[in-house]
Image (cartoon, rainbow, N blue to C red; front, side):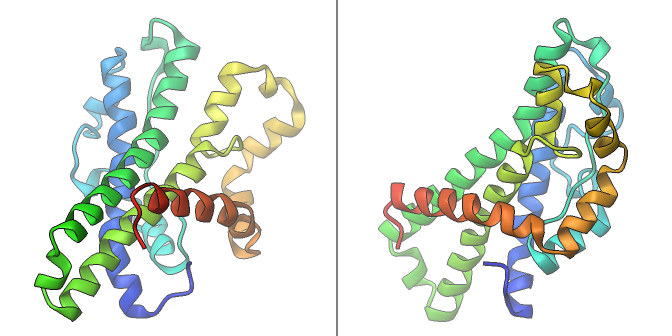
Length: 213
């Protein structure tokens, strides 16, 4: 899935950007609706990629298939129900990515029904369908990364809100060195081996639902 040519890496850029923006905007929007204006003040209530893209994380995303975006800063004290609302904000990002993956699949299906790809010609049509397909793939990648219950992924915030796991020293150390651990998992390809099976499964399921071959 991530073993690609330079041309394929370039074609993956729109899908990656949309996945990054979807995740960041969804979290910012949810936080704003639940009473925390921090994302609004920091300029995150926008679909402008500049507000959500971390340059290094984006480059790594293009090169190896997964990376990171700018974290959405929130102040849980502004929420009425701190733990529940904070969990909703965390979940908004990866749920938004899953919905976006489905939307990309729907677009492909509609284009196939109306023969849009054939009308554009072989080269343009094949390139467009590949770009849209990457939109499905990378939103699924962000969905899977989002639900991981380990720092620094959003799923860890939900885990913390639902349990008392933060009181355990081992979890506190993982959280303290989360970025270093993340990079080690990336370099050793352990993260890739962990997330690839569920990514392939969900990606394939979405294609099957829309009968896209």
